[in-house]
Structures are given as structure tokens and as C-alpha cells.
Length: 375
Ligand SMILES: *Cc1c(COP(=O)(O)O)cnc(C)c1O
Image (cartoon, rainbow, N blue to C red; front, side, top):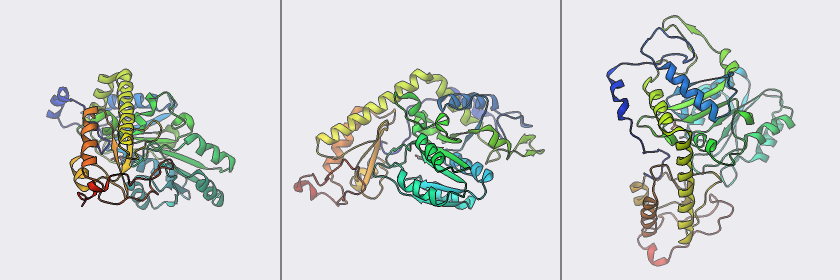
């Protein structure tokens, strides 16, 4: 597995005894619950750690452990929509496929904004579109690590744009599914988190951290959540979360991973992943494959491989491109094996260039003798 951002380096066997109980984190993790067998305390500890990584205001944040990045993104949009019912959501074309669905569910007005070739939002297109709708509240859905290209939208720049246009009511949600656990551990992370002006952030739990079960973390400014909280007598808890019954096991997994690795281990993981992404890029380039990646990204983009390579290595293809994501379980040896396979079976689609980065010129570089193998 080198195509999807799932870290396969983990061992949670010490947590097995907890599977002998029905545990449930129904309701708000910062409240109380009638259901005693919960892991609220552990969940709060996990949220505090993530709040630190995302520079959330220490006594003014709220959050919960979700089912994954998708739920966290939907929650951010839900909060924004509740605050500004007549707001317009702006999201780039490289946004995760699930967001269009969430927008349909929420019945929120939305406008899709162009993306640049590297996957980052097109700031000029956004600026012009915002200007036209200056009288409506602006809800910006920012990507911190796009799914296909690992591109990071500059949240500081988005905030500055809203100020410049004098948009009175605005909200920025940050989808940091993968990069939310990369950027806290690099030298130059750029402006992406609460300190840069985010109002809520969603991160996947099973991506960088690694987990046998999907999960996610949603963090938001507390004052927003207070406005939508409703108390429910039946469960004796505040119904602030999207789902009712929630996994009490997922917070244990996240807590275990965070404590076992510690900040040093997390930083070491990220260093390994970025180094390996650079290694993969260089090795592909040496063989005349126009591979590239965004700054601080562990996603390496290359021309779409053959169907057999896609299947064998679990590559997520999109039109003319494919990518490899060098997660913590990926090794140099695995990268080398992948490249060998990639070269043996040339891409089955002849690739045109518009989806590749501006720096990339041509990609029909393979010798014609190899082309016979392509299907
Ligand atoms: C993976 C991903 C999601 C969805 O997260 P899930 O945890 O699979 O629900 C959303 N946005 C981006 C950018 C992603 O990479």
C-alpha cells in the first residue's frame, strides 16, 4: 500500500482488553453523561494535544473525536451554516469529493473556485468571486493538504483577503485530513491553523497517526458551539456532536498512539516521510519520469501508472495522474520496488500535461519499445 494515506505502522494489542466491554461516548466529551462506560477523560486529553498542535486558543476551543475527516468537515460547515444561514461556501475544485455531498445535505449555497496547477486554491479567482458577493457572509473551505496533490491553501492569505474586501461576516474551516499531522512538525509550516485565522479544523485519525479503525478529530472555537448546544435528557448529555453514539475505543487508539510516539516520535515520523517523498521524487526524475511534490508534502505525483500497477500498489488515480504517499510504513526498498514495476509497465493512458505542475514539461519519456506492453 503506497497509494492511500494510511499509516500501517502500529500495534494496539495492549488495548485488546477494552474490547470486552460495550463502551460509548454518546454526547459532548466536555459534558457529563448518563452512560458511565465512556472514555470522555481520555478523549479530552486527545483533544488537548491536538489543540496544542493546531495552536487553538487554550481555554476557548471545543472538539470531539469523529468517525473521520469527512464528519469533521461536515461539522465545520454545519457550524458555519448555523452561524450564517445565508452564507456562501467557497471551495476549490481540488477539494475532497465528500464536501460536495455535505453541502447538498446542508443545503448551503456554494461556489466552486478554480485551483492552481499545484492544487492550491486560485487566490485571484477567489478574490474576484468574494468581491461580487461581498454582501453575503463568506464561508471558506480551505484545504491543508489536498487529496490528490497535497497542496496547502494559505489561511493567512485567505484571512487577509476577507479583511481587504471588508467582508463583515466570515468563517474559515480547514480540512487538514492528512497535513494536520505533518505541519505541526516541520520547520516552515506556513499559515494554516487557528493562529492564522481558522475557525474550525478537521484532521483524520487513521491517516498519519495510524489506526486499524477510521477516526478523526474536529476542533472548533468554543463560542460557536455554545450557540448550537442542546441538552438532551435521555442521555443526560449535551447533543453537540453530529452522531449520537460515538466510539469510545477510537479515543483510546489516538491517545495510545500520541503517548507512545510523543512529540519526538511524531516529528521523527514526519521527517522520515518527507525524506522518503523527496527520495521517490528524485529517483523517478532520474528515470525521466516527471514526478513532483508540494512543499512539506509527502504526496508524490506522477503520470498515471498502468492498471496493473494501480491494482498492485493501491494507487489512487485521477484522470492523467497518480500519486504515491510515503506514509511511515513505506521504506526505501518499497519505493524502489514500486519504481521498478512502474517502469516495467508504462502508463496505459497517454498523458497530456494540464494536470501536471507548471514546472513539468513533457512526460512521454518512455522508450517506444516499452510501449508495446501497455494495455
Ligand atoms: C482523506 C481526506 C478526507 C476524508 O477523510 P476521511 O477520514 O476518509 O473521512 C477529507 N479531505 C481530505 C483532504 C482527505 O485527504
